[in-house]
Image (cartoon, each protein chain N blue to C red):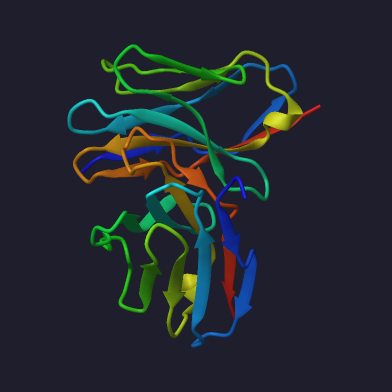
Length: 115
Length: 112
């Protein structure tokens, strides 16, 4: 597709379960970002992948959060033993080469609700 | 550290009214500045940007001027439409952290 694709669009799960969120970046984009958007708040950076470099994980809030990316394609964000405070919209973005002046193209997000 | 402060919303306007959404920043050096817009049910998309002082970014009737002296990048539009109803995020490119730093967003509601 032409844009960043995220799935699922909505996920409701019970506290303590693991969840996996998927992001398909724009083809040819080497940089991929994950953000968390809590209700009424701004975007919180989670993790950044750039090509084959080691990812920047500095924004991950705890060791329950992890993410992987295969080459320059799909990325998955995994949250283990989910807690209610994990409820948020998780946004993925990609950009051409990770340069800060490059526009980031966002997916529509995954709305995660922890019961 | 680098940060962005936006006016709190919601901003409620009638169609054809003038819009200003304030944004100020704190940063080392001269970061690039951005406005992103998030329409209901959609992801963020870049609205406009400015990369150096006194630059004016513009798109879809929206404008913002990079003011170094006041560390501001206020978003303006002369005549808003119902279709402009969305959440607007100001952001800066932080060369300290090599990341985009976003404000908390300002919800705009335009009524006919």
